[in-house]
Length: 123
Image (cartoon, rainbow, N blue to C red; front, side, top):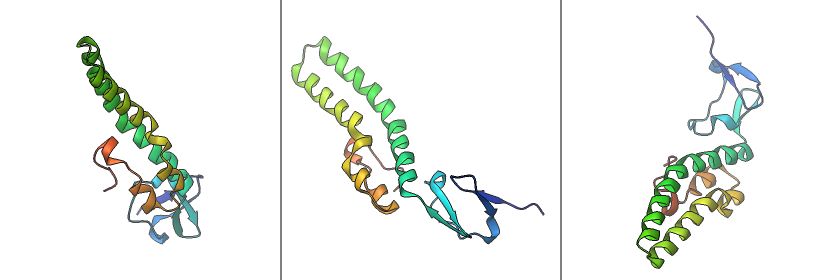
């Protein structure tokens, strides 16, 4: 029977059958091996989290560009201002202080701003 190995973010590997594996695999790219125990590197998880924000916000920014163009065509100053504000929040999402200040994976997951990005993929 073939063995299955787990490889951590640094390229270290162990036999999966001997490892204590986190039940949550959202931040698998941030796993770090400590003997047979896998821990999650919060700093590496933050980078993964920010990449997920960028992935989710791309279509939201595209849609908001359409809203802005329609407001521009209609010369609707209020709609333009609202669109600019929304796009600013989307652009600023990866730099949120809740992400910077998160010192656990649970706090990092809680940093997902549903009011800006919609439903959390970590719920």
